[in-house]
Amino acid sequence: MKRLILLLIYLICVVGVWASSPLKIAVITDTHYLSSALSIGGPALEAYQNATGRNVADLHAVFDEVLTDIEREQTDILLICGDITNHGERRSHLDFIGKIRPLQKKGMRVFVIPGNHDIAVPDAKAYIGNAATVTESITPDEFTQLYASFGYASALKRDPASLSYLAEINEHTWLLCFDTNRYREHTTSSITSGRIHPETLQWAFRILDEAKQKGITVLGMMHHGLVEHMPYQAVFFGDYLVDGWQDAAQQLADRGLKVVFTGHFHSNDVSSFTSSAGNTLYDVETASLSQYPFAYRFVELHQNRLSIDTRFVDSIPGKPFLQKEYKSKFEKLSRRVAANRLKQIGFPLPQETLDALTELLVKMAVVHAAGDEKTDAEITKAVETLQHILGGENAGIESFQMDFPPADNRLDIAL
Image 1 (tube, rainbow, N blue to C red):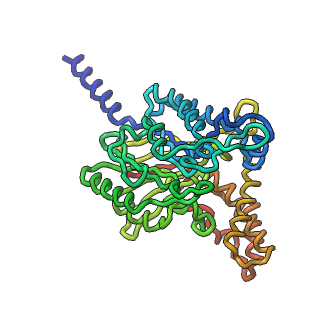
Image 2 (image 1 turned 60 degrees about the vertical axis):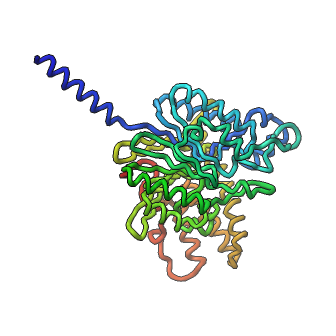
Image 3 (image 1 turned 30 degrees about the horizontal axis):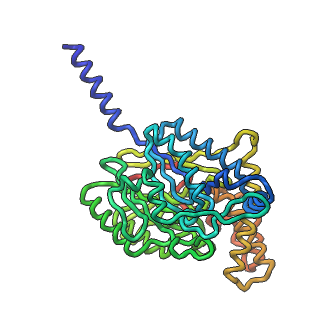
């Protein structure tokens, strides 16, 4: 009898541990995968790599490192938040799927949503020989066919107005995947900005209402940001948020959406939005695997919380100082982007002020990309220089908010 009681206690403990074991979810985004068949050494590829700062072989090695780590961790679910391919090349889609398929065959579930670089891209190119040439992209219908086993075939619900869908994570949790892209409006190139169709938003509201009635937690996933992640993002980089983001965040938070996983801005950041009714929604943005800082996330889904951790690819075979090399590339790219943005906005400012503002934006972008921003000597100097040029009393760096709460790289979110 004593042995029987001990056995029962043991079984209860084992079952209890098993029942409470968290689901392990990996999150990657913005891989911008370019097939090796479309990127063969020569002047065309060299020009592309110089312009973008992306070495195709390096990015393939980074991706392999990440997939190896995801498999090693015995991950249950992989979320992919869009911009899968470089510019929507059919060949790149097929090769990307070939890289992920072995994980599926070992039992990992994969859910994907498209980004602005994935569908009906008019300037999809191959970089072979002396000059880049146009290559085949894919249609929205072809995207759902190619990625049928990545969420679409098993979807609980499909949105008639877009490629949005609802998937089941487990009996207590749903994944609401929003298609926020504007590929039907493409003419000469992909459109960076995003939006949620009014019909899609209403479709999502009905799902969230149903989930609330059934006591089901809903997590979201989309390519574009739903919440601002840095000061004045809507002013300087509005294309990286969905149109009308404040109204959308307010309504989705009040309907019960707690967390949304995003990409697009190529930065590792978590930001929150609290509605006027007091409901909080977290936007968990993951950085790109195509540039510094090569970040990806592991998320443990517990019964009533998410535990989020971030990892970075620091080196690849033959490149022990990968981060240092690509941080320098990212800084140069950010300077060009910031200068162009300020020119487009057309602020009537003296060149000296524009130069100082450009440098501040560059410094902010570099630290923002890796998350958990801290002010350093360079940022302090940039802020003080700008304050001096603008005149008036120097308010000091303490008046300048670098990062919105909560923490970016390691945190828990209550569900």
